[in-house]
Amino acid sequence: MIKEFEGRTEKEAIDKAAEELGLGRDCFDVEIIETQRGGLFKKGYVKIRVHTSDAAGAYSARDTKNTAGDDAPIGKTARKSTESAESSAPPDAAFEKAMIEYIDKITALMGMEGKTSVFFREKNKIGFNISTADSSFIIGKKGKTLDALQLIASIYAAQMGYAETRIILDSENYRVRREESLVRLAYTVAGRVRESRASILLEPMNPFDRRLVHTTLNDVDDIETKSEGQGLYKQVRVFYKGARR
Image (cartoon, rainbow, N blue to C red; front, side):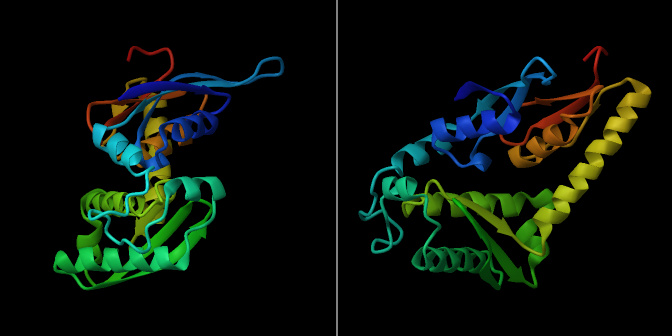
């Protein structure tokens, strides 16, 4: 499914998309298609195009109901997502415990011994850290295994009535290290593009990583970015404004 949203800033447009679609911000792909910077007498303007998979939309829509039947993973701890959405309350201890047990079970089924713990809590967002001697396998190449585990954990959370709660999985502080690395890469590539006037296509990235590159370079006046490709892992092209794309 593809939809377009507008806002005064990129964040405002993404927030509108997340609210209307009923999805966590890491469950859809954002492509910035138009940007107008604000000035003294005009407001800023951002237009984005949102790409979601049918599967993501299906489980989000399905799990806005009370699914405490036979297919619910934990019947007694399941809650109505409408109750969670209305109260905007942080996940309770029972939910955290259930998530920790589930993540530990998944890593055990992968043949790895690990211990999961909560490492941060925010409104409608919770982070779990997996401590293990096999962290390189848990993270995977470019974090793809960790991304897959995070998606599975997010679906599981939605089935328990926490579709509005964004689940973040990390191990060995990979997410922070990856973010810092991408910011450095974005500025380095922007410098190369400015010198050569030739566009550069970055490696395939997940939606969160692509969004980070777009956001990092959004305020660089002579540089623009766009996503290219199909599927979850698209590429970001960095190009000089005014040059042929």
